[in-house]
Length: 239
Image (cartoon, rainbow, N blue to C red; front, side):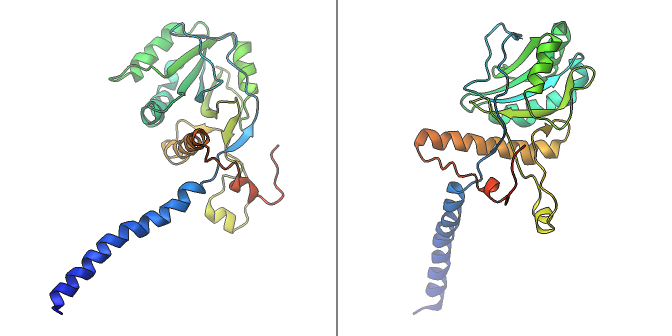
């Protein structure tokens, strides 16, 4: 047989089978992803809060990234811009997704300036500024598990994921592979620093994709509730 013909057939065979092999490797990965951990339950609903558009906004039945901008919203323009460009723009097409930014009453004018600052070419249809008195904001924040308190202006650099059942999602074990290999103590990730671009890209966005995959599989009836990441924490329990 002509060597050129054999060589051509071998190359064609490789080109044909490589994508098939790649898909075979992908298939189990798609069905055995780590379910995003529940790190806290029963976040408060937005009762007593009013939105900048006058709409009634709820956390229930939505996948929400929630943040606290405080008494001086324009001072949080970097954090808000990061969430707009790296999170909102990426997920705004997903069903029941929303961004909720909490601000105290009396900051309406400055909040509108912030909206204009981060607004680009499309309407911020799934981005809501929610106004409330200081006590209501503090109660809402207290219902969310966090590594730090609100500052004196009722602001936080962290944002949080709340699922459709008002459960807070995150990571029970946020150790890197190297930290696991060296048996570093387990530590969680309950909030995501909105100033740290790498944290938003590599952790918040990954965790949001996992959560959307979970709900998509639930709709299809393919959801496996086994939380393998949690099961790997031998003897470790949530607070």
